[in-house]
Image (tube, rainbow, N blue to C red; front, side, top):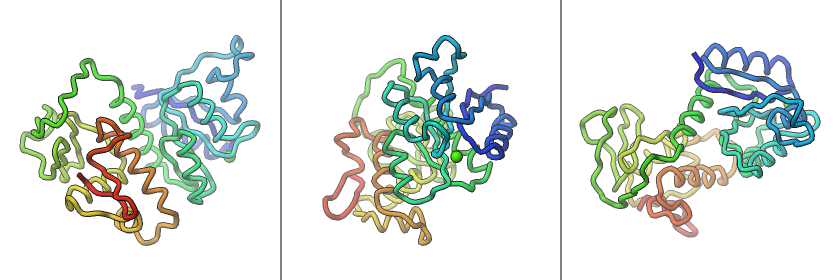
Length: 258
Ligand code: CA
C-alpha cells in the first residue's frame, strides 16, 4: 500500500525516525533527509548537483524550521519560487505566533509545533494530501456561478445539507462540505470558522471573537492567524479569492458571510 511519497527533512534523529516510522506504518513512502543542503540536492533545487542525485518528486514535504546549512524557511521559499505546489507541513520547536505566520507567509501550508503527537501529525499529512488531490484541475471547468441550488454529489447523503449558504453546503454530522457541487476538504480550524459563519449568517465576527470561538481562550497568538485562515478558506470557497463574495471583510470590524 502506498498512499503517497513524503519527504521528511528533520535534523533531530529521534523525531526523524519516530515520524518516519509512524508515516510508513500508515502506508506512506517516506524519504528522510537530515539537513538543508541534502534536501536541496534531492529536490533538485541545486543545479550543480543535479547529476549525482536521484530524482524525488514528493507528494508532501515535512520540513523542520531549524536545520543545518539551510533553514526550513529558506527551503520553503526556494521551493515556492521554483513554482512547486507540493504541500508543505512545517515543524518547529518555536511556538510563537510570529514564526507561525512567517512560516505560512513563505508558502508553508500548515504548521505543527513541537512536541506534537504522532496522531495529529498523521492527520495533518492526510488532510494536506487530500487537499492537494482536490486541487488537481478538474477535467471540465465550466463554473456556472451562483446557481444557488445545491446538487449533492453521489458519495454524499442524499438529504440536503443542513447548513447552507448559496453554493456552500455543510453536513455537520459528517463534517463534510460541498462547494458548487464538489466536496472540499477543510482543516479543522477552517471547518470551525465556516460552521460558525453558516450558523450565524450576516453576523459580523471580529478577529478576537473568531480567535475565542475557534481557537479557544487559552490560545496565545495574534489575530493574524485568523486572517491567514480566512485567506485559505477563501481559496476553497470563492470563485475569485481576491474578490471574495462569501467571506467578506467588514473594514474595521472583521468578517461576515455574504
Ligand atoms: Ca531542527
